[in-house]
Length: 98
Image (cartoon, rainbow, N blue to C red):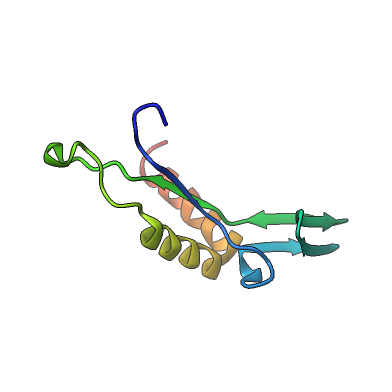
């Protein structure tokens, strides 16, 4: 990035961790070209992202890449599934008055 922040995205491929892509109906296939979805009624992809920004001026506002933290967030989200995440989101938005 222009501001010298490093951007990090964590995702998983079907071959090792299929829980990160969940489809209803149809089929999912992990290929060398990417993930192929055929005739799915619905599809949920779990992906997390972050940067190495730190609120520490002494370190020029740069910290470590958040790969471990992001991986934990991804594991947690995929383990709860879409319905639970949606319920949490609605409850959170309702509580915040938004």
